Image 1 (cartoon, rainbow, N blue to C red):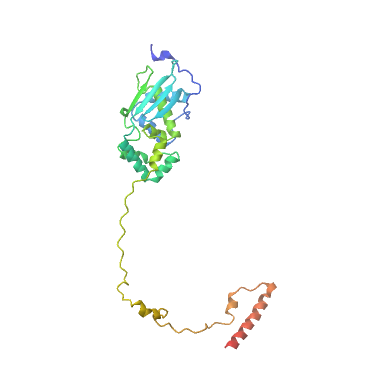
Image 2: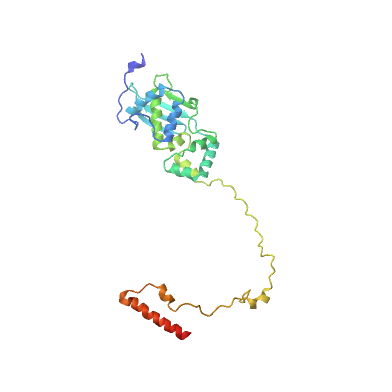
Length: 277
């Protein structure tokens, strides 16, 4: 019996449907990056066959756990097929290096808390010697209970596409697959960062006045208020025109006398100046 004898897949009520009705699947850079990595493995039509399954809602369930993604996909048979995709979790030393690098940049943690994957995170994982996404098809162990010997079959491919959309909704699902739950990761990121000890302060500079001799306090206290140099003689008053102030002020309003008040005040200031002189 050939696979074509099984006919079209059975309809599923309430299955997980891809949000994208046509075109590429994946909205964010990290989900598109995941799909691009899979397509770079030259899987050809074996991957695209599952896109229709993902959009029809043939995937009944999808679960992401550390190291393994599992799903149940309804095909043409009565019983749905069991799918598992294994991707080894990172060793503790690699996670320690990743978390140290993430703590060192507060922006990375802030973007993760906002539901975004910072683009630099790929470099962080690469520097720790453990790539965030698979480097080759050999990094993945794929299994499906269907009779199709192709790997990936359309049931595996449908799981990949819905997994990409799960990454769209929650980037922590990628990190969970690699071995860190959201709460565990954020708890480690809130820990103290490894800080470099600040450099020692420079030695204090000697003041140029330190070499100037100072007399004993008892000899100088009676001259505390004496100026160090004689003050120049200053006139007791400043020579100015008697109406200087009037010329600086605006003309008062009419209800206060207006320009007539200014003339009377000017005459009074001139008389006052004459009497003082």
